[in-house]
Length: 51
Image (tube, rainbow, N blue to C red):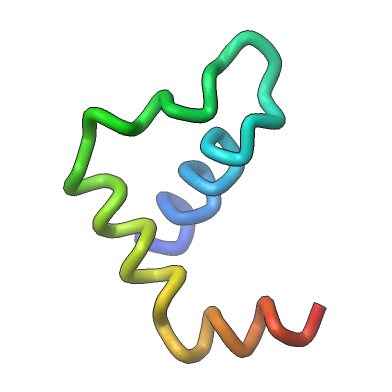
């Protein structure tokens, strides 16, 4: 579940969704915390480093 949350937050926060500001989740620190924890996980970092 955490990976799905990470991907959704990453997608919306990237500013690539029409009519939705990239700051949509700025008021949700726990959600951002889950995103950041997944992003900083060594396995996820190595996955992104491959591409």
